[in-house]
Image (cartoon, rainbow, N blue to C red; front, top):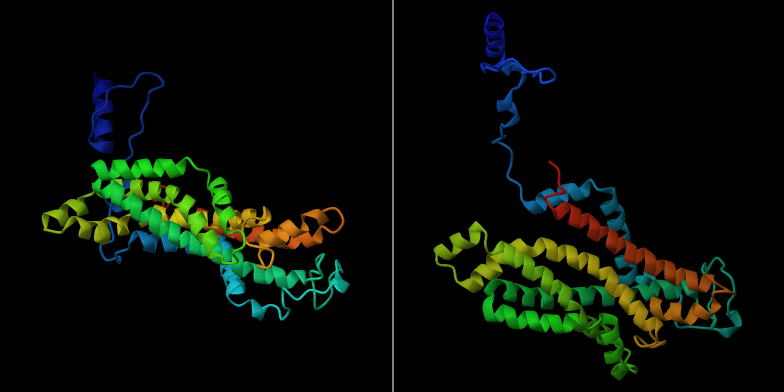
Amino acid sequence: MTDMTMNSGSAESNADVFFPDPLPGQERFVAPLDKTPLHDVDSIDEEAPATSMWADAWKTLRKNPIFILSAILVVFVIIVALFPSLFTKQDPVACNLEHSLESGSGAHPFGYDLQGCDVYSRVVYGARTSVSIGVLTTILVTLLGGLIGAIAGFFGRWIDAILSRVTDIFFAIPMLLGAIVLLQMFRTSTSIWKIVFTLTLFGWVNMARITRSAVLEAKNLEFNTASTALGSSPMRNLFRHIIPNSLAPVIVMATMSLGSYIVSEATLSFLGIGLPSSVVSWGGDISTAQNLLRTNPSVLFYPSAALAITVLAFIMMGDAVKDALDPKTRTA
């Protein structure tokens, strides 16, 4: 009894809590309150400026070396695509058979292809075609798929049922297979828009599903209920509140999909179904140089390397953006 009183007095002196005598192996340590300042741990700096999800994401991205490296590569590729004349003065379609398969020199660092065209200038000018198709397709896919997914997720019921069935129909068609079949009708056209519209027609499905899921989650949050209670119309809620708060997964999906559309264009051109040989593109040059893999692999290597680096840069950027916008992976 005396031991019990002493133990309880010791426990109460530590944390004002009574603990009975522990069994062997069950001893507890109770730290004094002055060593556990919970009020400091749980305190909030009320003078700190308010931040948003986008501000926190940008703060995270600025410290991410993968994002910095990918952003530098993406900016460089975009500059090359917009201003190719800054990087070469050679005409990519001016070919001379006398220089066929010649090795590189000072003015022509990548050498010549089988037709005597300067490989370096074709790689530089090929960026314009490939990147343009990737960017334009991503924009149209985001607009079309995002709008369909937002309407289906927000209104639900029979609208959601109809749009979901239409989505399932297009989802059952492989994008490349559908593009190959459709582009057979436009093989003589040299416009990049035939590739853009074809990839958009078969590529909006995933964007619609991502947007629908994000809208379904956002429309059940408190701000939508409060806006409705204040008299806001459904369409105003959709475009003013729901869609802006559902953009994070849409942006991530668009960033990561851009590289896949560049690969799709290169694949179609490689198969001879995309752009004709008169249009300079990485896929077309890879298709032309495939027969030289054993005898002169450098002609195939340079456009392939440019394509791989560009796609890798967009994928790395998409992964970094996804991690920054995901609250589960962000740290304070």
